[in-house]
Image (cartoon, rainbow, N blue to C red; front, side):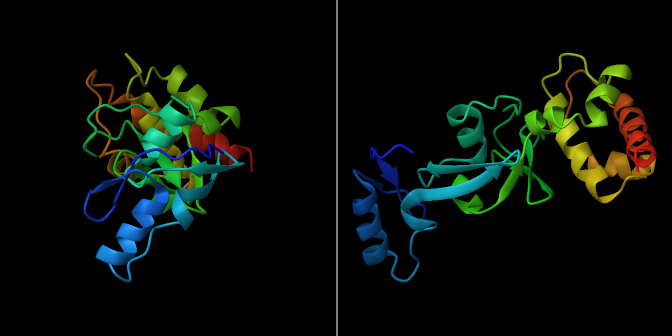
Length: 194
């Protein structure tokens, strides 16, 4: 864990401070009773089943922490506005747009990325390849992660349920027809493995 303190930004008003202590004093004085999320910017996350402790700035997104700081670059930043789904990660079992979630809000939570899904040998990876459910591949991690979140709660989804679950994911190459086919194939393999 990095013990060095860099400039920090108040999560409530955006004012910048030279140290975590300065931010803490500002929050307690200016934003009475609100306190700092997580103890002085230290958070604990379980990422792909491995525990990590991070010193984070209040304005860091989950995407920035995992992609830029930890180096798990599978998730992509397509729009940086929560509109495309390419940065999707699973947090405590639910798909989230990691560009819209502050890392400090995830203290104590479990995060799953496309790297974890691939490392676990999930049948979605092979199904996406077999069914050509990608072209340039930029959006593919978001589709795979969102599909995994669906299959975690429903191993026999209808095509309509798949389309609804993936409706927040955009693809510039228009591979949309292949996604339900790949998800149904992976679902069949999951059911057969039971």
